[in-house]
Length: 611
Image 1 (cartoon, rainbow, N blue to C red):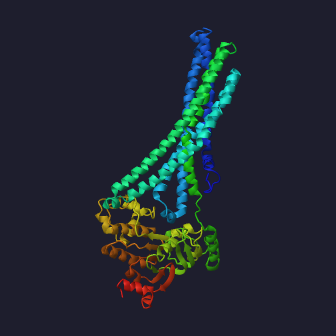
Image 2: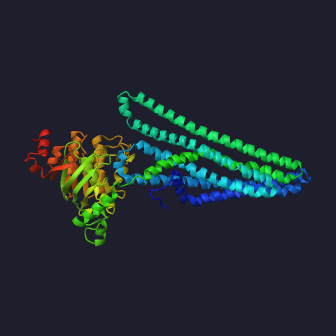
């Protein structure tokens, strides 16, 4: 069962809604608890009868043997039922943790890298790992205990009423005191848990940031100060945890007090009625044996109160994330895309239903160069920063187009739009006439390969890092991509060749070698459009020459290349140049033509010493 990203009501409602997916497991846990409660009452009755028969009736032990055997069998049965209840509860908890993490990760993926770049990665790591993991105790322990607290007292009351209606009335009247004081203490516990969870997320973000910047901190001699900040955060978390535990212990103390007093009242009344001859010993013993068991699940529920408070705090953050809209301007984007597709081409669904040669392809072996077009595209960031203004650009099929401009001109924003990481507020993007809308977003990304400025290499072998782009690629395809990227000599020098383990950031490779690995990965994808985001910005001349040569070879294969960068020498070799300034298109055309015109392109060439 899948849940909508949007949910109504309080965090408690969200937790109940999530419980629907594990309702079967929780019902089995409840059934095991209910059967265990019935077995407990039968055990108490057997024990009371055996004590009465042995003490007052002086019956021989052999006559009590069947009851003793039945008592032992019920004890074993209760142990098995308790194990079954815990088993189903913990299965429900583990399943919920997996489902919550998958749901949150899926929504984070929908929000996209552009949204994540504005957030603290440490916060979300803490929420996905510690936060989702903490929900296990809620579903595995708290919900089964709550069900037991509702079932066992009812079973005990049903059993006690025929034996002693006075004691049963006392139990019935005192039972509401436990949940009443739980409610009274609940507000303080909830506030303490919320503060503790907030401190934990901040501490996780702080630790992650310090870990990533450890080298910088050491070089600037700021390691000790960073450690002190981390110590302060840890101390705040300790105090928050102790505050939650204090509330939990106070709750347990209050519950224990009222439970003990209630049991004492039942014992006194039962003793006096037994003394006055109004009660038989077996019934009195039966009541006294069950009275502590009547309050036991309620006391256990109070001891787990902090588990619920933690779950509520986590659920609040989870709901906040899931209620974040994936497309802030989704309705406007869809309207613009539909209108643009009607005038300039067709939507993805139209293409699929048309049965024409340009049907959305799924087989990359049939790769053909594609034209990417921006029609009156404008974009503004959610914080109000201007991005792009009314751009009309065509990246021609099979050609190399360089996008240049000063810092802040909008080059990175343009790349995010082309990669589908952002959607324009106005205008539309088309690839061979297919508009980038919800129907075409997956197909659109399948047509793209991306080479970033700082490539991400993952923990694993060199082969694993390349196969991310095309898991089904064979060795011949890997060798061909490596050769095109100028990586063959690097592989030959690695101790284990293709199976050489790489660290998370490409340990053992230089910056230029890591960039060539990323280029080989992009080539292995064999996409018709290759997008390059200043891939040689931080490389040495030797690495730049190798990658330049690889890109020149790729350009002859008929792919559509979109290059963003500051290197004017690279722009001069492009088929076409697009010049941006302050989010606006100021020039576009062949580089030879633009350099003869007095404009920004010529000024950038002069600043680079190329004219």
